Image 1: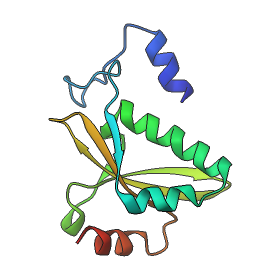
Image 2: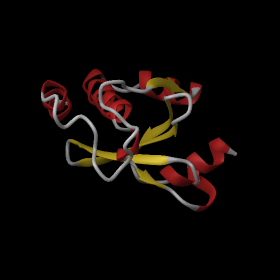
Image 3: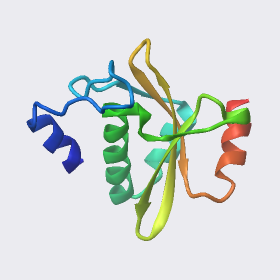
Image 4: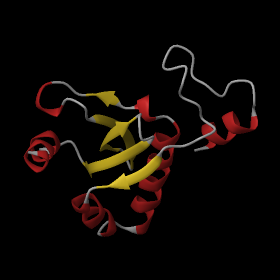
Length: 121
């Protein structure tokens, strides 16, 4: 989050060279979520929800930050972050035409992709 705030205060480097020249950090994408994502999110402890909200905001400013998936999960991106030495995965879809990010799933690595594939199909 601090990186974003520093970028916003520095008016020179607002776009990421090499990624997408149309993408600007001035205008974050609108955030939406699948119902299952919201149900899972509200069951987490407050510290986890706070870190998750920070990750959502980072993604809203730069939707291309996550790793794009292939195969059955084509069109899904996954952003990875750490919380208490555990890697957390946050799956989302970015719609560049509507300028919105749709969050699909969050959780640990165990069975994450299998469960995500079942939910999306």
